[in-house]
Length: 613
Image (cartoon, rainbow, N blue to C red; front, side):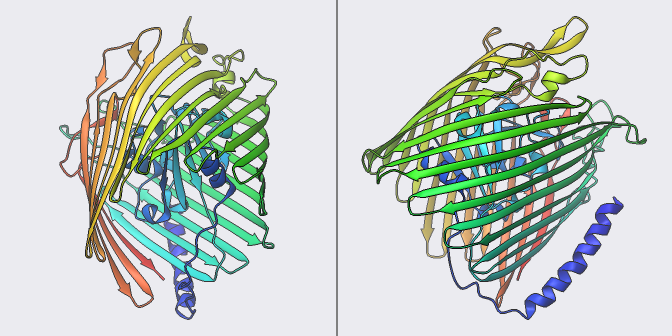
């Protein structure tokens, strides 16, 4: 814990120096300009119009003091499986597994090639400028794992004179403390964004209905640095970096007090060159990702297992406006993965190319055709394609549809785990089709999407003799309905907003004809927000259906509903401002678990002060 305390002390001194400097600086933020859109945004907008996409902007993310996992759980129909508070958090999108959802950071995938997942409790929303949730298959654009959906995390730049600082401090239940700092500086040719988060918690909440407490304390540090320079009107050079240190004593179960812990270190860096002309857009990326974990079976000694994964990615995209109605793009990628640790030293080289095409046949109808092919020596990667269209039937009604084939390659753990890995595994192969109905009126909008999904050669770990091994045996069949809507009403300075997300998900093991484990049949989230001038109030309701603990068992985790409330007030202090936020989660003190025998927190609160200058 000393490491975090030392950092916080240093950080406060550093902030005081910045504050002194800021007080003597002239503010030039009266100029209002739009953020520059990156090439990843262009791909998403121009070649995915037949799919449903949710966008969360910076203004929505700034108030969130929780992890990305909590944010998505509370604001979308996505189901996240959390091994108790702030522990490992994995995702289930449209009934798929956590390794069948792709997470993309500024255009490069960041899922671990060791286990195929992203831990959503290690990503913080305040280090991101925009989050996009792209539903449905996306392997043509985003590669392996983009079967259930894709989470896109993006940082943007704006080139105009500005100097903004933001510092916040949070205190909460279970001896939880957080500090955060953000810097946003730019001129007409240069821009820099810096963010830092330091946090710690005893995380010792009571297990309701028992005399036991959780013993999953944690502490961590998260730092992001993004820099861009505008070489001229057509060329821009950008650098992104995001580092994370996390030390977690793993949480107890209802029956056993935990003794193990895990340390994680993640580093993501990316260098990007972007050329934009009147009709073309060229983008070149070089990325490096390093993930390191250390697992201690006994937190009292230093004996541990470890894994180290490194990834180098190079990508080139070229998008051209062929005519007023046609856009086309091509891309090539090279990815190198290599590992050390428990799975020993292994390497994998992957080459990929893809072609994207969009035709705006009329002002109301457009369609697209996209294809992709990958090559690697380890196994044969299937050729994948996607077709989609969007048709505005009425001024307020648009229908969208898409069909795609998608894949997921075996992880290094699947292939090389000592005495259990299977080097003969094939990639998972998936097909998906969906139809969406979108209604847009003056004060409200909603959409209803239905889909079918089928995956074969799914990789499952099953007992073979005396050990468990991964094999291609499972076939998954699924279908579902997703509904989302928003209603907004303004009366003078009063604003009312209601958001809803609902999902009905059937995801079955084709052989057993039973719902897959940890896939709820129903999930809904509702939120109501009232704002008046500088004050806002939010009520949030989350209900999740029961889930199976094991696919071939009747053992279930009960359904649960949780309600949260929050209050925010903004004080204007000449050119600066002070925000006060109070959040209270699980206000009805509901006992519930997301993972079997791992209780989630009882009623708790967080008080946050944010100073912007």
